[in-house]
Length: 288
Image (tube, rainbow, N blue to C red; front, top):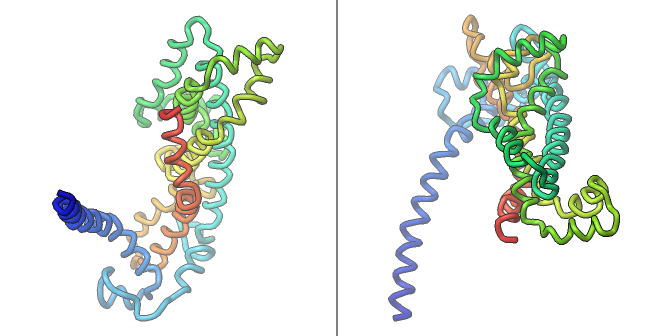
């Protein structure tokens, strides 16, 4: 019997692993093609095709993409737009995470009349398509004189991110025992003292989740960036969209591939460094 179980398990592994490897290879093919092209010269790609191994590592593509290539008529490379994305993503991530944590805490542990309705209204934004928000945001930014500005994009991502961060934090805080909150009340702790001294130290798993989620979504978002910014104020994703506009000249696939990889490095680092904490934080609330 034991041998039969071992053989059946081995048979499953022999089937499952090749399938998983095939899916992983299929998923990674575009990234591999872009990575290889980032080290190939223009002549090498034009004489053959975009599919091929580099004859030698051509690092000049990376330096030109960083500081010399033209994006939308501005020949300063990709680094100004990456700086714009950092100036948008970092404050928007911090603000939306803090506001979401406070909202989730109030809705989960300091329940008040109408809390369920408030929670439903806040999280309703999770299900709204981004295209439905374009006109309201255009009117709002124009009224606030924030059109084509980095603070305007920060405001958009903070308001849009509160729905997700509130949802994550509220569901996590709902698993914290009410006895802790009652004990804090007995000791005379107020709302924010309880949050600061009791709830916040327990919040590391879910805060990591919200930070990773918000940063990657804000960094990779381009609809609002390309709609509400232009020129030097564009984030990196909107600047990369300008690559498709250069149809009047020969495509520098090597430089463009390097630019794409440079733009992807921050989110790749976030996932590499915090991916395991992301999964751990998502499951933390379900096993309490």
